[in-house]
Image (cartoon, rainbow, N blue to C red):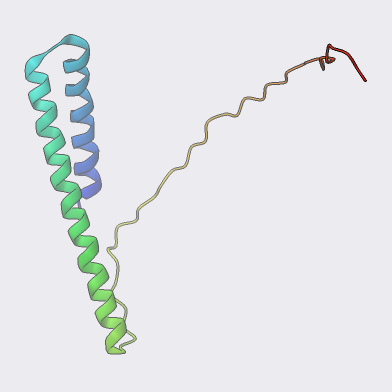
Length: 104
């Protein structure tokens, strides 16, 4: 899991480049390379899933054994950046329509 973030970013970038060439330029070999990048990304994610599951089992075993020592998480610091799209406010001026017809 040490290099997961770097490997994932690199593989995603490769995937987007090859996919763009395949879709926009009809480059057949780029499609093959895109599939290869997608498969590599799939393997990286499966590895991440396995590591997470292993850590969860270790933590559960420690909790059940009554030990107060905690299994330490990796020293890597994961920082997520949240970017919000600007909100557009639309003011709609409208008139209420009067109902046409006979009133009783």
